[in-house]
Length: 368
Ligand code: SF4
Image (tube, rainbow, N blue to C red):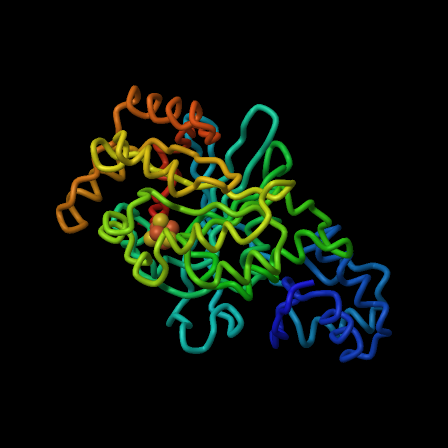
């Protein structure tokens, strides 16, 4: 169980079992009703107190007077030609939505992406509205930061889209808007509820959390069993700093040094996301440095094709720096070179580009 801070909130979604037991007792119910509440919220996934039929009418009325469940449907949906679906949620401006210092003046919008594949259905969730990290190539970074999402809003994305989806979710990736390690309490809370036997009981091996590499990732590694994906994009510290300001807080060298202290040789996986830009990070020099840096760390690399939509924005809006997508053959060369030298490397298909749903493209465009 993670070391979570108590959440003082009228929203039930996102509360752990001990907190739900406290809620039950606070409205005059027995402590065991906390477990019933967890079942209704996380297994049955009800949207109203009236559906909680094994809780007395008086108990339900008392709950209604003090709490809300916290579920709300997406306000819009966009469907890509490749089947990817992007959902827009309006995060209500209730007091628990954001920490007091970071609460916005009104409700804000966030996006989530549903990615169906042959034998799986993956949901990419947001953990913050916007992002502070300012990666130069990322459209989400241009949004600025509008607040941390509470666990209830992370879970709401999962539950709502799972209910709408043509095939049920099999995997979750925390790779939408935001840096998950920058909102770690709420991310860990949502992961506990997704994996705890009293709640959703998912295997942590079905969940991957991403990071640009910040010191808080140490706590994530130690308190969670979910997979980790590090956005690397360049193995050289000096070059990476030019495109990822977070490198100043923790260099990729230090990130890899930290990762090497933990055991990734069994079920738990660490991977590196690597968007390829022609001539900038896809050269033999970069490939050799990747091998040197990652030597001794059981991991995999996902090479990601950069898409034209982002390139246009990156070129015009972001300090006129160009981010030309790598040539397909160069990516294949890099994959084969790394694989031949013992580093498991794949090229990841880009999905949902036509609806701005691919990596780094979440800009709440549905609101525009
Ligand atoms: S790539 Fe991720 S961490 Fe970087 S600005 Fe975009 S959303 Fe934030």
